[in-house]
Length: 179
Image 1 (spheres, rainbow, N blue to C red):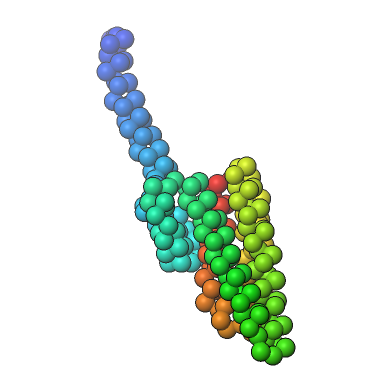
Image 2 (spheres, rainbow, N blue to C red):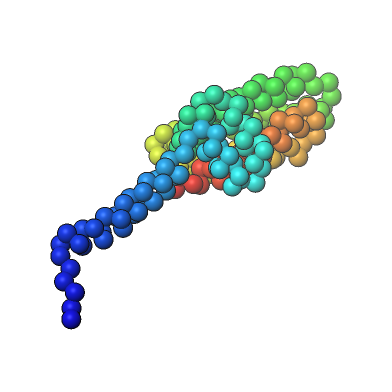
């Protein structure tokens, strides 16, 4: 003897399945749209230097309400600010050099940072055009210039070089998540 299943019986069976699907997709959508501190922690955990990444991004109050795209833009802006500051610092060191060797090492670092200023703003321009891959390439180049400066004998820039080298490495990982 076959059992008859009516349309109303099918609806009763389908409703829990549909609700379950909708609720689970809402949960995953919410997880993908994290903002602020939870996003910073989740994002920075995936980087090579999570403590540096977290510290730098949390230093900007805009990060507390940022999604991944805005967080990436903030990272670029923070890099630009620090590169600008370091260029000015490298210039002061250069003009105050008291011997040729010191002048040559400081001159090399000033050149690297001065070159990075233009590059990082070009990276922000690419970012704003949603050319995230190009922005990431620029950050890679800036990271290389910072590394080059760190190989020079300019101990006054060691801390800044280390911080920027680590953060730009992390920023490349963050930007890569956008494409």
